[in-house]
Image 1 (spheres, rainbow, N blue to C red):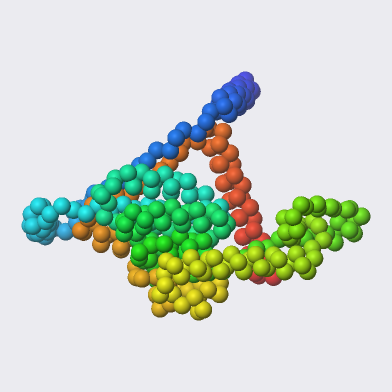
Image 2 (image 1 turned 45 degrees about the horizontal axis):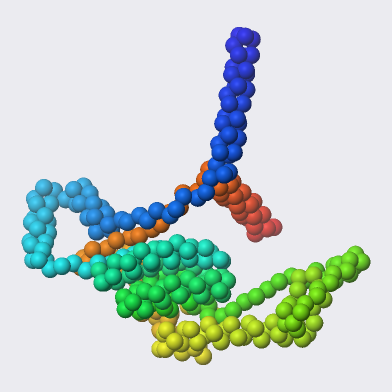
Length: 336
């Protein structure tokens, strides 16, 4: 028995060694690799929807009911057979603070515009709470390319299109929002800590030298002045004015005096404020379009080297652990 125990321990050590060596070699090999170019995937949503419907019908209907239904569907297909179907294309945009998906969005739109006149509508599902002004301005300008070609653009919002997210949505000819989606937040925010007093307390000097009076206004480590604060606030106001002008240009029916105060509205209230045009989920809207058009979902994916994939997984695991820890802390505080 002792021999078997020692052999098992040796085998486990040997296996661990082999796995570690293989992982290190894989990391070294992938370190010099570049990310592969993005691959455009196309999914025919009509086919997916039909599969789901057929599967359900076969499960819940008896043979007689199923036969009648199939007969009606064949009749409907005959009447519309000679009519050319419209082409609708769907894109997804899930925004973070840096609007990181902008480059993928750009490539997808560029690919679509190459189809020329064979596009009847582009639908973009936008989900974003906003972020950096210049990044979301860039993302919005990508959607503007669609409008510039005279192609009808619809934006669907299922959860949130606020601040930079709404800046993107407002470019559309039509905005469709779910009943409890968060819409608006037409405002600008900037915040930063200042450690100057802490540095002074520990006799640490920090110097900032600039050429140009407003090259730097507020700083994190230097001593901030009232003049710098005023300039900083002026800059914020200027950006807010630009944001409001952008909204007004694309959606003149909106009363900016009411809505451009940074507040948000939920679905139905957003409709009353003319911030959106229709209340429905993206699923409802796309199902409706599938009845009269061929609908295609486009998505682009980029294969990353092994090193980046492992790094991304590790980062996701760490984020999950931190979030879990914070939730536990919040739970205990709640019951104190």
